[in-house]
Every structure is written in C-alpha cells, then in structure tokens.
Image (cartoon, rainbow, N blue to C red; front, side, top):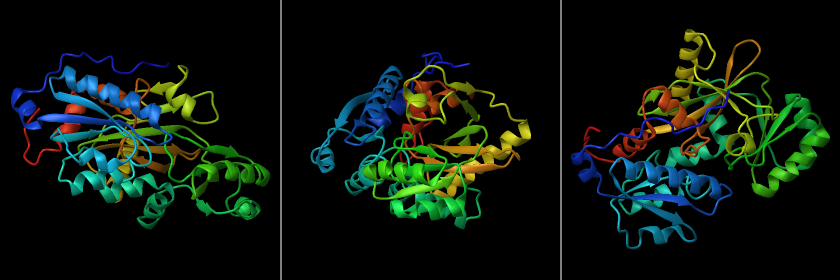
Length: 325
C-alpha cells in the first residue's frame, strides 16, 4: 500500500538554546542540475519543517556561479538540499568549507565519491562488499563484449546522475548500444551493471544509526524517476518484509557501505536482494530526496522521529559543540 510522507505530528520544537546556537540558517535548494525540480521540492519541505521547529531558516535558490553564495553570506550555516551535480558532488561542500561556513551532510571527498556510481562500486569491490558485477562503458562498439562478460539483463546508468535519471534496463546488445547513447548524452562516464532480479530495499542512515529498512515495489520495470516522484502507486513496506535477522544484516551492510565511502550524519543506501537471499549494494546517496515521496522521512517516522525533528537533528551536527535537541 502506498503511504504519504510527513504525516508525523508537527509539534516538535527545537530547544531555545539550540535555536540560538544554530543562528540564521540558509536552506540551499534548486541548483542547475538535472534534479533541480526535485531539489526545489526537497528544499521547500526542509525549510518549512525547520521554521515549524522554530529555527531561523531562509530558503536560497542556488543558481549560476556557486561562488556567489559565499561572497557576502548573511547566514551562519547551510542545510544542503541540493541534488545532483554542483550540490551533491563535493562542489558546494568545498566552497562552503573554504569559506569556513558549516554545512549539513557529508564532506567533500565522500560527497564526490558517492556521486560517482562507478568509483563507489570500485570502493565496494575493494573492501569486499557485495555489489553486482559491472563495467565502465565508453563506446557503443563495446556493447557485445559487455553483454558477453556480464550477461543480461543489464542496468545502464549515467555515472554522475541521481534520481534514476537516464537509467535503462536492457536485454541484448542492440538495446545496450541504444541505452549507452542516451546515457552518454547526460554523462561522459556510463556504468553498466548486472541486473539483480528480486526485491529492492533502501536503508536510511541518521547519526551513525540505521533506521528501519523500507521495501520497495512498483509496476514499473524498476524504481525509476516516475515511481520515485510522480506516481502514487509505488508500494513502500515498513516493516520491510524481511525476517528480523535478515533486516539486521541489511542494516549492517548499509552502515558498512556508508562508512567505507566516508559519509557522515545522514544519507541512504540502496540495496537489492537476489533469489538466493543475498544482498547487493547499488549506491550511496549523500543528499537524499526530502519531497512528499521521499524515503528518509518515512524511515525516520517509523523510528518515531518526526520530519521536523529529523531536519533539526541533521542540522545540529553542523555545530562544533553538541547542543541537545
């Protein structure tokens, strides 16, 4: 059954001493990436939740030259709700870090690494974590060789896009070549990986803790952009449907993936389960969506954390000294 987000009681108020310590907060949203529309929705939701919690928060639609965001800042810290290139790939993190402005989420290296799906998989592989077999593809001419090496079906992804933008499921070399052309228009690096047939799960992480896992199912071929943000027929399962010991194994795998990439405070890890019950890591998201179809708020609510408390807890980690929320 589909269930709406953000229905937790909106009575959370950040303590006055925390509000004072946080100061004036900018919520960066929008940006110029292919995920601009989603980012605007995330940013508005975060902004509303922070203001409801009593935080002095203000929305900033970041467009054009990112350096201008720190030329004359009238804020004390930033909640990053930017998705995709420029906002999730270490760029804005580096700019804010150089300007000595605290910001939410992962730092430069982890942000850049997690945004690069191909290199994230190299890290998983190097650390002995399970991830589907894969190849980097650089031309259509490689299609037959890739199919021969990996088998079918396959997933074709632009390596630096999020929100499932540009992803295709293919069943033969001709489809792979066509999908490569489409992905290459979005990115100069294209990832091809073996398709894992089975249920999909996502695990949200908050302050080094795994929240309840969510099981996902959709009538689409996979959990694509429409299923994530537009349709109302995607099925979210909490509890996720796994036996307790399997959910614990899933959560531990997600935490390990999050840590080896070097992420901090919050994020989300996407995982598939095959017919033999084995889990396979797909990717790590360092600035997951916070829209009305988003998964992190849903997982937080299942753990008894309202949306307002969630965003305040994420923001609180920008303080050098802890002030309890």
